[in-house]
Every structure is written in C-alpha cells, then in structure tokens.
Image (cartoon, rainbow, N blue to C red):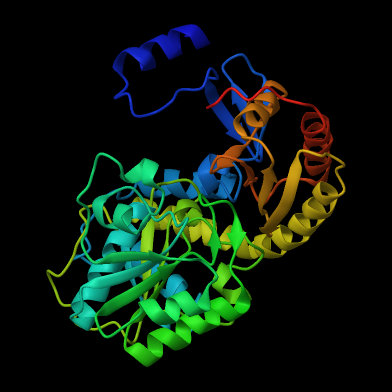
Amino acid sequence: MNSEQIMAIENKYTSGVYLKQALTIVRGQGASLFDVDGNEYLDCSSGHGVANLGHAHPKVAEAIYKQASTLITLFETFPNDQRAMLMEKMAALVPGLDRVFFCNSGTEAVEAALKFARISTGRKNFIAAMRAFHGRTYGSLSATFNKKYREGFEPLLPGVSHVSYNNIEALEKAVNEETAAVILEVVQGEGGVYPAALEYVQAARRICDERGALLIVDEIQTGFGRTGKMFALQHFDVAPDLLTCAKSLAGGVPMGAVLIGANVKNLTPGVHGSTFGGNPLSCAAAIAALDVMKDEDLPRQAAEKGAYLMEKLKAIQSPSIREVRGLGLMVGIEMKQKSTPYIKALQERRIIALNAGLTVIRLLPPLVISYEQIDHLVEVLTEVLSQQTTDDGQ
C-alpha cells in the first residue's frame, strides 16, 4: 500500500481521538524513522519518550522473538522465570524500593500508585503540581493539571489539589493529616520541560515524612537514562515511597511498573491486579532493554550528549527563543510564539519533534543518537528558529 491508501484506511476507521499526521511511518532503526517511500527522518520524539534505546534494537528484538516462541502470557499468580529475573533487576535500581508491581502503561502505573497510597495510609487526598501530566485515565487525569485534558470528563477523583511547582511554601501549606500522597515529576515533561529545584524535591520528602504522607515520583518520561541518570530522582538524592515508570522500560513493548518502598503497607492479595501485567513477553523485552542500558552506558551517553546539545542550542542567535532548558536528553526550547509552526517546519525538513504546552519545542531523541545527528539537528533548528513563522493558531 502507498501512503495515501494507508492514511485513507486509518482515517476511515480511526476513533477520532488522534490528530493524524500526513506522514506514514513503516520502519525504524536507531534514531531514524522511515516513511512508506523510504525517506529518512531524525526522530527527536522517541514515540513520546519510549524509544530510549532507539528503534528496533537487535537485542530487544531477539529477546522478543525467543520469548514469543516460548511463552507469551501468564498471570502473575503463577511465578515465571522472566518475571523473577526482571523483578530482581528492578528492585536493585533504587535503594529502598525493593518491591515491584507490573502493569501495561504509565497511566496504569499512576493509577496503581494512587490506590496503593490510599490503602497504605487510610487517607483520601492527593497533592499534585500545576502543569503536571500524569496520564489520561480517571485517577491519573485527576492529578493532571491541564484543563484541555480534563474538560468533558469531570467530576474527576475527589480530593486532588494542585499547587505551584517548585514552591516549597505552597507545598508546606497544602500537605496535612488528610493527605495520602504528594505526586511529582522531578522534571515536568508535557508541562514544558521544567526541572525541579534540588531544594524543592528534598523539601517534598521532608514534608511528607513530617505529615505522614507518601511521596510518589512519576518517572514515566524521565526514567531509564533520559536525564543522564537511570532515574531523574538520582540527581536530587531523594528516595520516594512509590516510583512510577513505563515508556522505555521494555524497549518499546508496552509495559509499566511501580517500584514500592517500605512505607507502603497493606498490599494484600486482591487489592489490585493486571491481566497482562508482568507477562513473560514484556518481561523478556525489559530484561534485554535494561541490559542494553547498562552495556551501552546509556545514562552517561544521555548526560554527555545532552550537555553537548544544550550548549549548541543556547548558542543559536534567534530573537524568537525565550529559553532553553532541560536535563540530559530531555530538552525544551521555549519560544516567544506558539511552537506548532516551528514543529511543522522541522517535520518538513525531516526532523520529528514534539510540543510541550503552547510555546515549547520538546526534544526527546533516542539516547543512541549520534553526535553527527545532533549536529544536523542543531543545523536545521538554527535555520528554522531564525526564521519568522506564521502562527496558525493551532
């Protein structure tokens, strides 16, 4: 099928909840994506942060093939060799978080963490941050701030409040004896690529300890090397009670997880569950992905390549740029105008990027991106950001 035929079929049968691009992708390799006509695009979206290892990593592909030929699905009540090995690897990632719950996505991981916080503390309320994004199912949507995601679905989960990000005083006032947990991204992604201040994250841990609340850190986008550490919280020397992760965990295969600390209580049989969570196929893919992250030292690569990219971006002379910020290979370029025209202009030049809010160009390239590809990215960005674009209002 050609591109027009593929798009026509999707447009005929799609649910309607996605704004379709006029670009049909059929293959990926490393940091590149290829359309149906064989044209190559530099992927600086990583599928919204999923492809940290790049596309079609051979070790992940091999693990999937081998496991698919052995055993694909098995409910977690039955122990399994792949799940056991992955649990052991996951429990070693963050000191103090030595239990794990497996699910299928980031929003499911957040749902589980919220339930675990309530059953553990006996409390009902949650504190989240302004600009936060935690997912689109009801509990995670309740913790998400942007009204465009919430409108049409209220009333949402009661007892969820949002306070200013990086504002210790606001957090001090908000957390009380009725708070089950504070949920934070230590680098906000969808909200504009805003890293938290060290003092803020450490204060959140202190406040939760003082008030008997749990601290949930959402590492769905920041996890697995993206920011230059295995998890972004490792930049802050803080351990949460619950850590949610997903996206790149299984090298592109859908998988989510919650890492669980000692303060989380009452997780007894039947409290929660997931039919596909921890299935052998996803676990085998995740084992391979974690091995690749270690063998190729991808967190270090992200730190070094991210610093290189940030330095290059900050040197771009454009009156349209308000600020360049980020951590590792999670970078936001805040414009003085809406970002959509710039993202379209980049795609016309075969670079795929994301927005983050109305004015931020978000770059989440695979951690395996080469320095040559980074230089090409900067060259194209310099051209695009130095031009005046027409605000199309999107």
